Image (cartoon, rainbow over all chains, first blue to last red; front, side):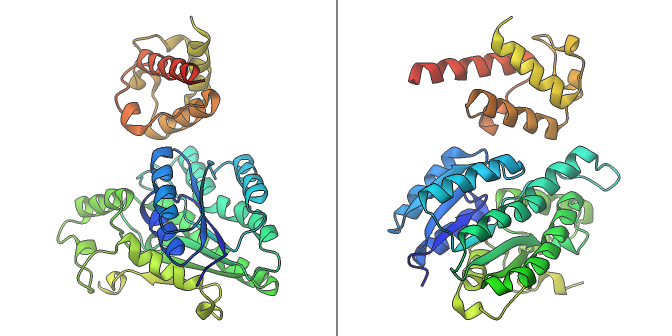
Length: 252
Length: 83
């Protein structure tokens, strides 16, 4: 379904990003795996992607730094010359309350989680010229729910979602679809850190393990929806943030 | 003092905003008043500066400024050995 397409997944070495890379590769796309600090994980993911019969390339770049974004896209341009799919997945942040949140943590989180989406998109669009591009952002329920310790990331994800809507309209005439997904607690290393913080603060049953759907959200659940948003079947979905939480956010 | 030690010191001072004089081989991250984000930013800056990788598992073992410098010196030497 995605044969001959080229997809960039930022933060693609581990967790949700890795699951998305694998899913898009299964559907035939060549995959560029951006990573920041985990080269071994990135190389492993690249090998796993290649085992599916497509091309993989791992590129190190801190997407929180606009100069590194430019270097990454220069490499993509010289190696592939085009881009069909851009998944803005890279994210970082540290647990904090609002009153403890200082400017440095704010900037770090916003730069990687929100600003990077804008600057990457500005470069990605040039490589998508005339190619029916797809852009998908990875948000979280913390953009509109007050999750314990999650304020810094929550704010950045709210920004990401707003930008998703603006870009969906601005890029529609270029034939580029822009959407996002927002998951609840996902069974990744970082997802479990915030899940534990929530349990410590709120107590009671660990709700992320017992969603109405009966289990926690896995990275593959997110990847499946992202793949759908990258398909032609999703052509008339624009600027939306699809929730993937097994019903978690509907239960008081 | 080695050139690597000087660079590590410059990096920490720039990111953590601590006094240069407090950075001795035995000074701890508490002495520097460095928080976890400071440490990540120092690691990232040093990885870029020396073109090395400092895995989190290794970084978690650092207790003092001296540990930091020794590790970077070792990795840089290994890299030169590979070249």
